[in-house]
Image (cartoon, rainbow, N blue to C red):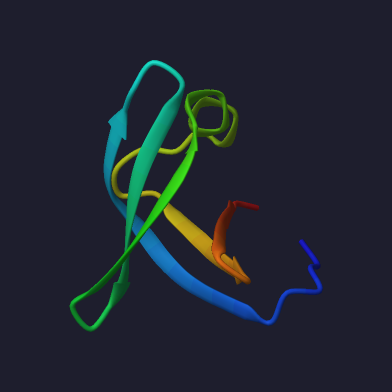
Length: 69
């Protein structure tokens, strides 16, 4: 995966809270730091996100985007 964004952090899914449409995904990026991203429930399913899965957090402006290989 190649992206133009330069603020990219590796992490591991720590927790997923699904609502009717949106989900909060907590990502452990190490050192006691956790980033929370709000994505659609469809995105969680399409990316196959689950607790323990490694992900990349891509930060652009005020948004956090998740990516997997």
